Amino acid sequence: MCVACYVDEAMKAKIVAYNAEFHKVSKSPYGKDDEIGMLNLIDARSRSAILSRADASKVFDLSVDHFVGMPGWFGAGDQPYQIWMTHTPAGEIVDNSMGVSLEANQLVGYSGDSISMYTHCGTHIDTFNHFGYNGQIFNEFSAKEHLGSRVWDRCGAEKHPPIFARGVLLDVAALHGVPTLPPSHAIGEEDLKGCLKRQSLALKPGDVVLIHTGQMKLWPDIAFVANTPGLNRQGAEFLAKNGAIMIGADNLTLEQTPSAEPVNFFPVHTYLLAEAGVPILEMAYLDELVEERVYEFAFFGACIKLRGATGAPMRPVAMPLTN
Image (cartoon, rainbow, N blue to C red):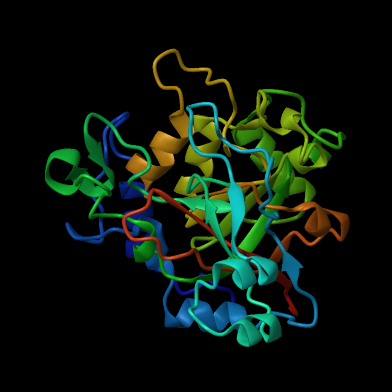
């Protein structure tokens, strides 16, 4: 059974209903309290359908490591990834933070550490409160009513369910016969349709769509962050209107940078998050899928439940399909 073959015409109408007004947040067709948008297409039947086809003998890890000095979105002054020891075996003998005997500290080697980082560091999801228009985010939640001193009380990472879905990989770099797309290459509808034809695939409502730009060939060099090839708004609309529940890529920003639009510096983010109700996955490691030409797979990903956060680390995996 295909993942989305039971999606009826009414559901398809809801998908199209998201794409209503340019540069204006959308009301969710799932009601005034909805905070997860297209992820509503995941249910017991869709999860069972994809898991029944998953070949668990092979698992592709789609995440990158976190480490000091890793590339990331730090151009706006956000915190790079840092890690430091808070307890070391030798240090505990000196500090005795546990208040135990010297003999106990010499016997028990205690190590501990802490991290700090921007929530959009490494492989991660973008939630709907990350970008919006004119003081509002997806489903017309407003900063005036729903943004406190620390976090939004709507559309945070903790609201995201674990994602079990059919995954589709579109290898745009291969379409153009290059290992990695040139800087600022705009991926539009023509590229996406070209990939679907070349790979003999069709999009279905309920898909997680991942785009291979080849940018991970640059990881972890700082060149990874500059002038990113990625989706433009036209490409994003094509995927959203075909029922994608999440869209991701192996690059820094999912979308083309710098922006081709004079006013909107992140037109794909604002469109997907505020208008289309489609969350974003960034910095996905797709090279192994590409090497083995696994273009259709069972996707599983669950983000850390950081309450109110605009983004959260995710460790997604892919498993080939048996039929």
